[in-house]
Image (cartoon, rainbow, N blue to C red):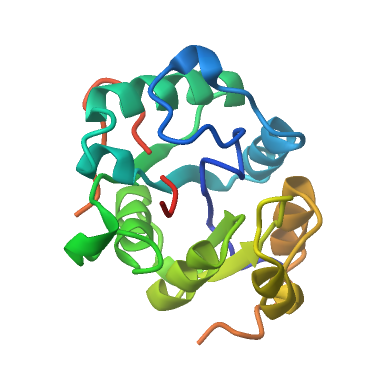
Length: 195
């Protein structure tokens, strides 16, 4: 029996194609298996969410409103997730919500009413897995062509070949051997990436 209550996904490079600093909803494209993974989690009664670094806001390259519109488009394509949170800060600000820090995961868990230890965090880079660990959650790496080779090797024991496999592994109760201020859109989903 699984102890997972929620699945939190990274956005860019995990659920949707990574378009750097995307502020255009028309450029949102789901990655293979994304909709299936979200549907699988929901079918098993798990809460779902997105936790995403969006440093383009802090860098002045896009607005929070643009990120919210992109998230709303992704949310519609995915069939609706329970929470979308993103860190709007540039990497050098030292905020507590930017992955690999735990703030986004802790905030998402609180909004969903689940303990952080009940969250599975699925992403495509080390920062996603490290943020999960820092929050006391379980992290799974689903590498893609852009994932650094050393990260693929480092996190091989806690990786999955695709998104549905990552969710299925959590449902089967697989253990994570390495486990030891976000923004939410007011009227649309909100959301990522370590840039």
